[in-house]
Amino acid sequence: MNWGKGLAIAMGSFIVFIVILGVGLMSHTVDLESEDYYQRELAYGSEIEAIENALNSDVKVDMEVLENHIVFKQSDSNALIGVNIEFKRPDSEKDDLNFTTAGEKQYLIRKDELKPGMYNVSITYERDNEPYQQNEQVYL
Image (cartoon, rainbow, N blue to C red; front, side):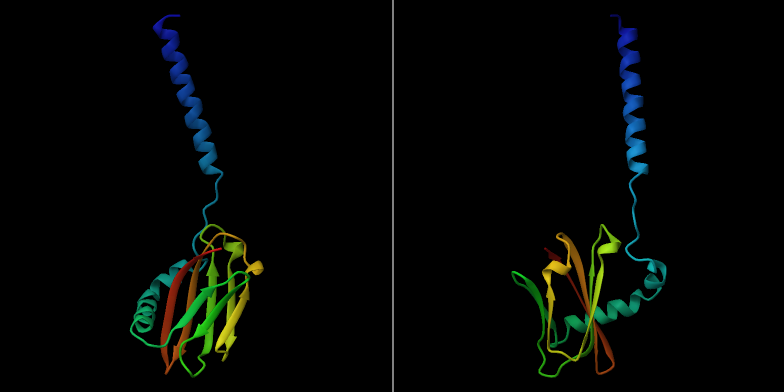
């Protein structure tokens, strides 16, 4: 075999590799983090303020992962009203879950409600008409 055939085989193999790679990458779906991404981006300043409020406050909602449950406990003696807990999967929007508590000091979520994997957990609440937001990651 001369060098011309080897060069043609190498170039042909490279072209086939690039075509297979391109088809594979084009068939992979990539979702935005949320459908209202652009509206949330415009309100990001208030989200930063809520995160800073939570960092500087002594009132927190603590998350504890147990064997069968995820427990959310409030550190304040007064129950917070309107605590919203969002579980977001970065890789699959259909597995996102949202829970709301109504004045409870402790809230349980069964682990079997959630698929195994990584979740971004966002806990939002209000106290004295000030917004608060805590962000955490959990691996189940």
